[in-house]
Structures are given as structure tokens and as C-alpha cells.
Length: 406
Image 1 (cartoon, helix red, strand yellow):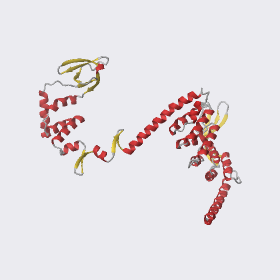
Image 2: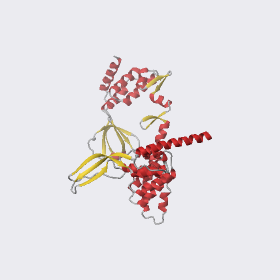
Image 3: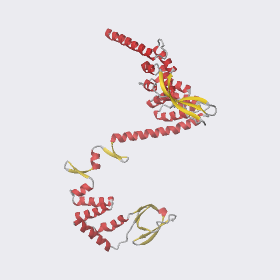
Image 4: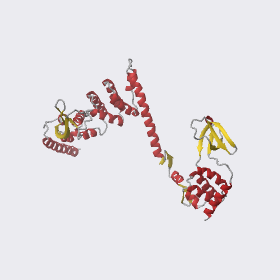
């Protein structure tokens, strides 16, 4: 009842007010402001603002105005009502509720804070402002989060440790982008590098943040000598990201020299777990990648891969059979042939069919023969399994005796 009477009184007083409704605020570059109605708002090409103020019409050049704050009708009405509200808890609460009903958040908060100045323990005002009563005291959600070690950062409350990680990541990404530009300039200068100075500059790169740029340049580079230069640089950097790039290039790059050079750099660094991605590739849907992974495992002398290699001797793959066309040719390609860089093409009158094929992987057999340093059983997987079981038992017996002697 009191709330309704308060609003009714405010409305009555407002209707008696003859103060001009001042709708907009014009902030000037040199300081100060003009408040009034923007008369020529619809004239987009006008070079001046025409403003109706309480003292009369004002014209001001647009280049003198830094910002125009256009007020909503509710804000204009609030400017008329606010001075008429009594400076009491009841009067301030009444106009705060009026603001809430019209979604005037900033204006409502002003009146709620005035209530707290009049009564610091006013429960409704505290709750409306987002306070919580914890441990005998009023705290805001923001204050509580700050006490718990959170800071507001990029639109969210985050722990200081998370903020540090985000900032470090942003700095790292910025450095990566700077290396993209720097390596591009070095590559352009390399074409006219008669002295070899630019070549040596590239070769001396050791910053791990340069790896994404090196990887991208190697993928696009048309000249083999430059590709091999990038491989050598990646080997010199030897960060986890550089190692991952070399592993990828050692299997997926179409240039055999790049694959061999990548393996050479990996063999020099020999990081822990190097065999793992190659062992996973032994189960790949593309037999080309299976065989290249086997070549890598043999080159790196990864005897831990003997058992997976046995299972990869003969593999089953989906092959796309194309028949017909103008030359009535028959062609075969394996699906997902990303390692070979292959694609699909359309031939008029051609037919395609996907069939499952068993493939004997010759490079897998060669890798097994090299790593076992013993007899070869060809593609007889059962014979290989029996031999490996006997060999493992023999090695376990030898190790047991050795341990007993010590």
C-alpha cells in the first residue's frame, strides 16, 4: 500500500513539473556536456547537432562532440521523478521499485545504495544489491569471490593461476604469429641469398615458438633443399611440438627425402615414447601409412615394436575399385589415402565399388626381418607368433638367471 501511494505521489508531482524533458547527453571533446533533445536526429548527413535545451535551441558542430548518450524514455522520466522522491527509506525504496519495473538497473542501484546509507542493515536493499549474509557480515558475491582468490578476467571470475596461464598462452600465440611473419620474410630473402647469411639465420632458429611457422612452410615449400633445411631446423629445436612435426613428416610427407631426413633427426633426438605413434599407424586404414610406419620403426631400431609388426604383416583394407570410363580402365585406390596426398576424380561412365582386400605389407616384413636379426617366416603370421613366444620365454629365462647371479 505504501509503495503504491509513494509511486502515485511521484507521478502526481511529475505531472505538475514544468521542467523540460532532457533526453540526450552530448559529451564534448574539451570537457563538459550539453543535455537536451536531439532535434535533427534523422539527418544522417548533417554536420551539426541541433539540441533543444531548457534555455533554448543550441547548434554545435559534430566534430566538437566526443559521444552522444541517447536516453530511453524511462530514463527521461526517471530524471523528472528522482528529485521529487523523499530522501527516506520509504521514498527511496518506492522509486527503486519503480526503476526495477522498468529495467533501469543503474538508476535502481543508486537508490538502493542510498537506502544503505540511511540504514546499513536494510535486508531487502542488501539482497537486491546481491549481498549475502555470511559470518555475521554482509558481503557481495564479487567480494566473496575476491576473498576466495578469484579475479574478474575476460568476462569470467577466474583464479589467479588460470589468469596467468591464459596470459602466458596469449603471449606464446603472439610470438608464434610473429614467427610466421619473420619466417616469411626470411624465406623471401633466401631466394637471393648469395652469401648464405640468410640460410644460416634460418638454420640457427631454436625458438620452440617458431615450430608452427616451420611446419606450415615445410608443407607448402616447393623446393626440396629448402624443405630439408626446415627439417634440420625442427631437429635442432627438438621441442615436443617439433618432434611431433617430424614424426608426421616422416610418414605423411610425399617427398621421400623429407621422410628420410625427418627420421634421421628423430634418431638423433630419440625422445621417450617415440615408437608409440608409429605403432598406432600399423593399424591405419591406409596400407601406405602402415608400411611407412614399419620403415620408421626399423630405422629407429624399435625392437619393442616386433609384436605389433607381426600383427601388421597382413592387413585388411577397404579399396575403391573404379571401372569403365572412356578407356574402360580399371584402377584401385585405398580410402583415406591422406599419406599419399591422393584425391578422387570423376570419369564419365565410370563405376566405383568399395571392396575389402587383404594386403601383404612388404615393408612390414622387411622391418621384422631387420629387427629380429633372425630367420624370416615370410607372411606366415602364425609362425612369427610361435617364434616370438619362444624368444620371449628364452629372454625371460636369461634375465632371471642374470638377476639371480647378482
